[in-house]
Amino acid sequence: ISPSKFLLQTMHEWNTRFAREYILTNFVAMQNDPNPAPGEYFLYLGRLSPEKGVDVLLEAAQSVFSRIVIAGTGPEDRRLRNMAAEHSLKNVVFVGYQTADAVQRLLRGCRAVIAPSRGYEHCPLAILEAFAAGKPVIASRIGGIPELVVDGTNGLLITAGNAEQLAAAMNTLATDDARSRMLGENALRSARKCDPEQYYQQLMHVYEETRA
Image (tube, rainbow, N blue to C red; front, side):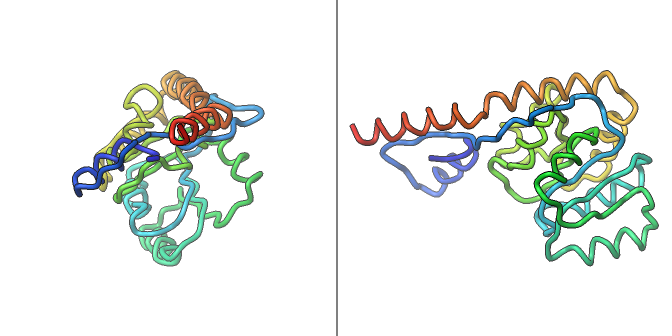
């Protein structure tokens, strides 16, 4: 059972085969009151580690005038805060670890979630959580991410590690409320395809086939 086509294809490239193969996207619980209305800031939500590309976001922030909220902790925390201070990025706010309720509030208030990964990801929960809140995602075109984020439909895709493209995408959404809302509404539709009940039914189907 693979969470993405990308992971399964990668295993095939390494000559790994299975008698049965299934692609089962991760599930996400819908928010009680999703909010596709464009918020006032961009949000990074996740671990602060090298493969997540948060330093690319900070580089892009130098050409972005909108506020950027970075939520999470990790081994890169101090280095990233120092980088923001060195470049006098007054539009960047680090809020550290957040509880589940606080994460939902941050999602409701943001304009889009940023996923600037430079390493392979298969089915990131941060993207699904953004969709469930009715928020578009600006993400790297890498790994399994393009299977979730459809460029121009429920978010925008950029080349991994390209700060210039990331800044341009953020500025596009910052100045276009109508497009931001449209992408957010489509993101919400995407999330409804990943609800827990549907996941459960698909998983039980896998088990029944295997048992048979």
